[in-house]
Amino acid sequence: MIRGKEQAPYVSRRRRSARLYELDGLRLVAALCVVVFHYAFSGPVGGHSTVAFPELEGVARYGYLGVDLFFLISGFVVLMSAWGRTPRAFAVSRLARLYPAYWVGIAATTLVTVTLGAGMFDVSLYQVLVNLTMFQAVPNVANVDVVYWTLWTEMRFYFLIGLLTLVGMTRTRVMILMWGWLGLTALVQTGLLPGAADLVVQSEFSHYFIAGMALFLLYEYGLNWQVALIVPLCLGNAAYRAIGYADSVGRRYGVAYDSVVVVAVVVVIFLIMTLIALRVLQRLARPWLATAGALTYPLYLLHAHIGFILINRIGDSVNRYVLVTGLIAVMLLAAYAVYRWVERPVGPLIRRLAGPRAPRTPPDATVSPPLAPARPQGGA
Image 1 (tube, helix red, strand yellow):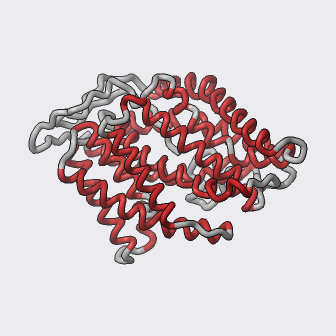
Image 2: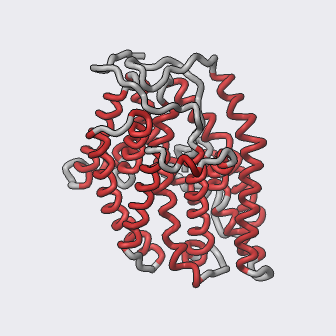
Image 3: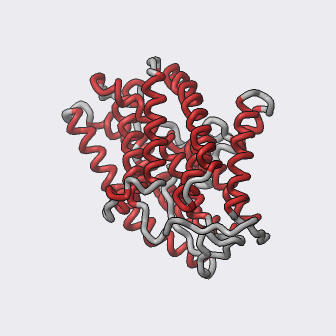
């Protein structure tokens, strides 16, 4: 690994010995927003559910913005997870974090689709096998579940962070990446770069990842002029792109989105994350939120197609509010089962099999840190 010194030593103003339980709780809120979006809006309006909630649709339609919050949290937590790791250690941490629950999600979704789906969703053996790689977008193979599209977005972000671990992660290099990525985003949006460049740039969501990284630096080192400039720039672009994205979602479902509400939600998302980075919300932290946050990823993977199929199966015989409330509870229990009996034992096993661990260097070190143990995060 290439080692490089900063121009001057940086002293961290924060300690990472204390877990950010606030982020765990926020992740679960984001996941539940997406669940409500699917069950109370996109399912019935999009024709995947026979149970409608017209009185909730006006609010539930904005639940897809939970994904935007996921990306902002990922920028923060994945950078924190990668700091102090070699490329191999970072790759192993992502493998151990993402794939066990994902494979269970594919198996469960496929089983329910084939046995109870009654033709609602198409799934083939080839499709399942390609989906197991999590790179199904490359050969343009359909996702087994609609929610998997966000994983490809996350994987491309991990690639950029992996490059940072390859050259040696320092504060200066992170700043260079953020400014460069923000500049490339502007070039793609203005048409000065070809559309193919967006495969890496991801201008639709790059501002969330960049802002999350900047907020991690704020949390770790305190405020400086670069962070103070990057975060508002990302917020402005996030609001601008969110309006356009809401228009495309509205066209898909034949509804109109209020751009004021969309921008307000984006602003609130940034505000809450900034308050977390500043430790203002630390008083809300509770240890039990760690378990709540651990449910986020398996809940996200399991809820959509399985939920639609179950709603259509029993929707005519159960009160709709009892049905959706009970279904969310069942999905949370299923998510806990995946976390308790799949992620907790399999993740550490993968890390052990991948190689020995080494001491971790804190993020205020002036050189690229050595190998360190992986720290899970909750990608969307």
